Length: 421
Image (cartoon, rainbow, N blue to C red; front, side):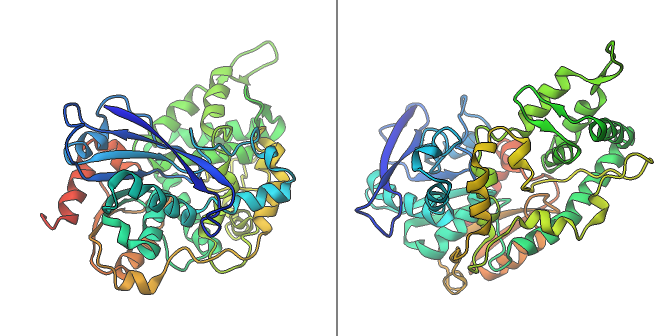
């Protein structure tokens, strides 16, 4: 059984009488149990900038959660059926400066305050369990820092952030992981390195406009490495590369089928916040992020494609770059807003190390060994900094383990957080 919920919450929780925005959340409860007084579990999606999944039956982790909980799938502010923040809606805010000021209220601290605003309305004031995947795990650690009284348990999957690393630190740790994942992919599919070089050579001579208007450059093509952080991503990348070209009267060209698949993988039309706020989720010391991934990439020259003479070609991963504001049509109208956010100063802390050190909320976290998206070393240091946190470090799954494993990952973590393992 599913029930829709809408809530009007303050844009800025420090000004509760000011402007309000709308939040949407979907309540899911097992058939026949709607009248039971079940504890609540709120799911915080990865991102930033993605809505909660739309379930079709009792799939993957949800099947296990519904045995014990009434589940709330929250569309975090700006996403899904919550008040949207896209190229179509943000101009309603006014100038790029006004848009950037508005979006400064869309980080993890505001998401936690949203949760605390709606929790008493749903639970009658009782604390609830939070399941945070990836960026949702970052939000869960913020929740533990600033509103632990609202939490009965916390479960984190692939999302223990560094408490003190800035964006530059995050990307200096990330680029070597990207290279390792890429090398591992070529070891599995040796033919793919030449296939990737061949596509890159073609794009270096003639960037291609994809069906959605995205301009596919070599750098944009490298971004397909984001697939390598998921359990089936290496296989998906291989099948994509093997059918890239078709013969035409003008010679071999990248196929429409290839272009359509790439457009779907790279598009940010539905999730511009992923680009606009991605580096801001690491900003805590007041300094601007200033396109950190782009700046740090210069420290790793092996990622510069050297394809004309048979040199190496490495895919990248979860990074955002200023040139995306020109190659992606959904971001072009927001380029000034994005630049202002990249230059924004005054970002405030998202975690309270002292509070985490005296934490009393039961916490369990899955840390995926050599996770492409979240540095394992950073996660382990954070795990040691949160009192009572229990970890499960595994190389059996990639970053999407909680979805790919069916019931396994969530069941293991529930037993861990309840001290049943």
